Length: 116
Image (tube, rainbow, N blue to C red; front, side, top):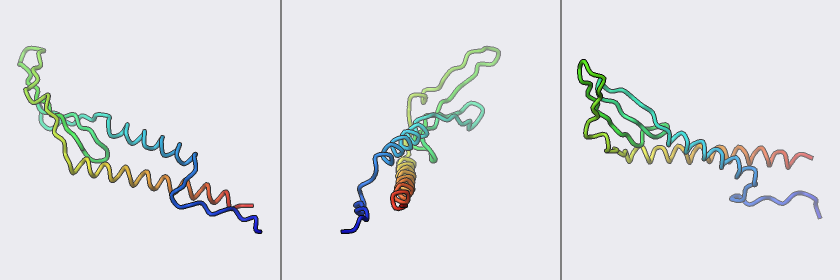
């Protein structure tokens, strides 16, 4: 009998890889859930969500009364515009990032296991 280690099945991975993937997934969720503000015009700005593409956008229209510090927010402030293309693209990017990180972790671990 040989003392060679058994070949691990393709879909089975190490616990340390799962932990790394968990932290990477948490980072991707944080990137997608944090809000970014972008100014379109002087009175129109939007809060955008998603990384690297904009998946959702909440526009706000603000009117400043001249000579007064009062700011009136327009009626579209409570609507959120969701981009299906942005959501799908963000999901594809996240899955690719998780796949690449998982493959790299497994290659590093299996390379160390092969060394005598």
